[in-house]
Length: 149
Image 1 (cartoon, rainbow, N blue to C red):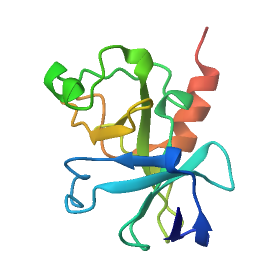
Image 2: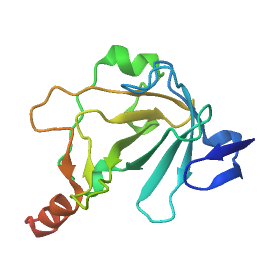
Image 3: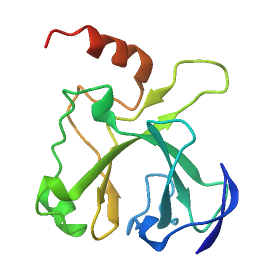
Image 4: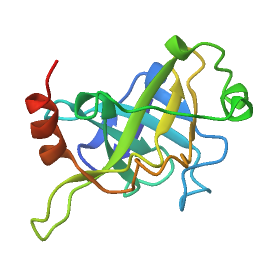
């Protein structure tokens, strides 16, 4: 499949990279079809809308910088994307990279949960007060490295 992407222009992507968000993402509900792409710099990824080139999000695995991250997601939400076992899921956080040089942050309050076999996904909304919409990735990564084992 050939799509136009924000980071790479027109590219060929494998159908296995396609992910469906039946309810879209918060604020982007009308866009439901995406592809997951590797970013040039690891550990980041791109979630690119298939429908609109300029709708793309940088993602990161939140467990890389918050090993204590816990998700309490309603079973109904998980059933909607056919997840019965946590091993079936990929978890990502949407990253914000401000143009003004402010710290790069990740949204831990609204993680993306992807059924890696069915390629169905949804954005969860966590109510745990520890998880905010803006966690400083670099500061928390440094803090995690200093924490005792």
